[in-house]
Image: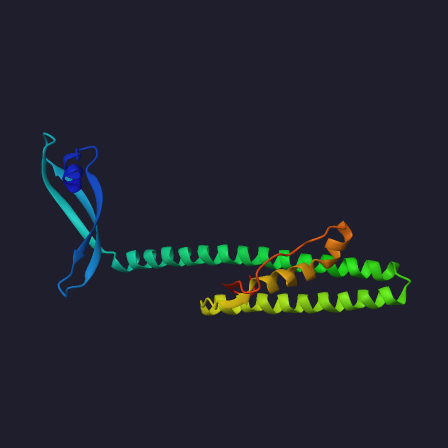
Length: 193
């Protein structure tokens, strides 16, 4: 019906319209054809015939679809990259702040026993930073391979690890955290997250 509307809209001042259609070729494959249609009018302005020239645009349409598909993949990868950047920034900032706080306390400390405890905390924080970097690298590997490796972990242990990383922050705010969680609660996670 749309092509009929195009034909009906032809007049001597607007005598050309373009049309594209999907068609089946002699070999059975589907293709695309672009048509330039020109109305031919008599002296009274009546449409007497239409000249049409068709051109195979299958490759152009396929290239366009491939570009759209690539754009979609690129957009999705961009979203993942932004999310990854946020995770990296957040994780590294928390470790950095903790290590910086411990170093500041080390500079102020004169008590050898307190310094030893602070060095232990610094070593612990450095190990947690290394673990975080390892996990972030796993994210890259997972995304490269498009795999979602889920690991079963003990929720209580992971919460304790997080609290350990935040030891300096917790101590500086003089707050107390009571963790009440059953020991047999496990969840499946991607370790880096």
